Image (cartoon, rainbow, N blue to C red; front, side, top):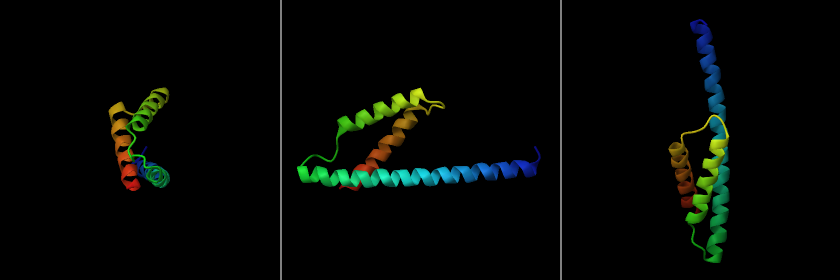
Length: 94
């Protein structure tokens, strides 16, 4: 593969990454919109916004799914990512 082919391949791969990034962004925005709706419901019932039992269930489910699928993400990285996602969604409920 010459330098021109390598550059084209790299550009194509970057375009695919960019497209996936947009999908991830859209999914995160959808998740946050649902979290906001849940926050409204929780507030109307007088329930606490944070549910650590549910958070732990999510982390356990995702860890299990990660093990079942290849390629696997590093477990600590997956947990760190989802703790941050849940934190952002929780803030959106306030």
